[in-house]
Image 1 (cartoon, rainbow, N blue to C red):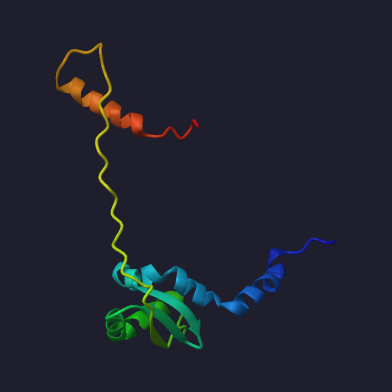
Image 2 (image 1 turned 180 degrees about the vertical axis):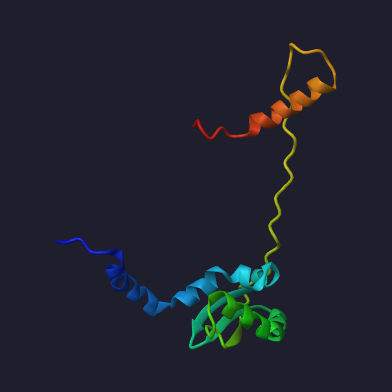
Length: 144
């Protein structure tokens, strides 16, 4: 065995993968929310890219909205993934694609304040007790 560069091994490894799906198709699938925005990404799913046609699954009236936005979406895909990657969109109805509500972080309930015994009562003691409660909820990255 002799040492070989990684660049010489890559074509043999990547060829079978890219036969199934091109690098541009993978990039379209993974970057879909960034390409079309959160609104359309929640309502659509890119299914397949073949011969310049991107098949997009959607349900209900979203197909009509996507049809009107097709030139813009195609331009954004080609800007992101390379010129000529997508030349047309094909919409397919898929009832399993349902609108997903945007994920919003839940507001955390304030933790109970810590007890500070050796300090006179006042606004400073109250503020430090509340801060101590919040500090107790943080994980210490150095310990497990």
